[in-house]
Amino acid sequence: MTKFLKTFYLTLKEYFNNKDSSEVEAEKFVPSEEPIIRHVFSKSHCANNAVKWQAFSPNMKQGITTSVSRCQGWSCDEKKQNGIGVGIESNREIKARAELIVQSAMSVNLAVEISEPPIRHANIINWHQDKEDRKEQAMELVNEVYSHKIY
Amino acid sequence: MSAICAPNPANMSNWFSYENPGISEAAKILKQANEHISESLQNSGTFLAEMLPLQNAYEEASEEGWDGYDAEKINYATYVNAQKFLSLLPAGIEAPEFTPESDGEISIEWQKSSKRIFSVSVGQDGRLTYVGFYGKSRAKGVEYLDDEIPQNILSNIKRILQ
View 1 (cartoon, helix red, strand yellow):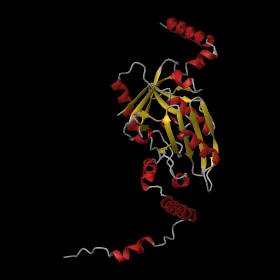
View 2 (cartoon, chains in turn purple, brown; view 1 turned 60 degrees about the vertical axis):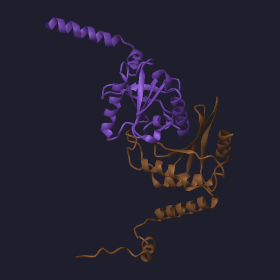
View 3 (cartoon, helix red, strand yellow; view 1 turned 135 degrees about the horizontal axis):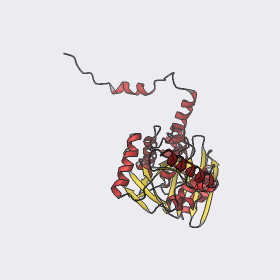
View 4 (cartoon, chains in turn blue, orange; view 1 turned 45 degrees about the vertical axis):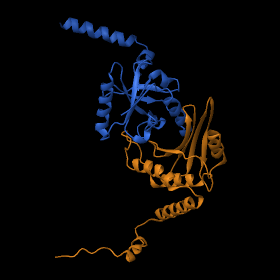
């Protein structure tokens, strides 16, 4: 048993040593084909049955990031329940959600980085430093949303 | 048996003229600016109804974390600047939409479609950050609110509304 564990350990060590830095880096990011959700808790961020670009504006207190959930394989109800759960932490009622593909964020020079816990949590990153450029990114990003759901 | 005394309306005006020595100079300046703006709005014919959506946006974002993601609240100075911007718009301009932003600013915008939108973000220091989408064309930049709306921004408002 000890011999097996030692062999297993050495195999894993060799595997990770042989991985190049680009492979390790890629595992930090959500795959481009995956869907993500931005939950909305402010009615001001919804209009005309759609989520507005302001809902995607990054949080400036936590490293210029926009919090999202990875929703690959989730049903509509599971997506809503995830939003309700996120809202409980901040004592806010879910108002809407916007769904898009990670590739859409990449098309406006953003990236989606895995940020767990909580499980399935990720952040949209790489926002511009200047407000006018960030605003333009958010306005372009909302046009990439393929599903708006207003509750 | 005690009697309930109704307030005498003749004395009520005195309640609002009471000078609270606890108000700071900055707050007094903002109060005066707000009164000037209200007077300007009445004189320019801008209806009170156009102010209500702005007020609603301000009230919804008046505490930290209002968006569920630790957003900054909109402070009174930002609200007053947004009111001032509204009061300086030329008469007859279509009413814009007001939306609070997570960095504590208020966006004032006109949207015709997903590809045609002009948005100005108003900050507490009078900074105006604008972005315009006109099909494939773009316009963006930064100006500051003074005694009039900067020409760049007025041009973009006219462009989106034409």
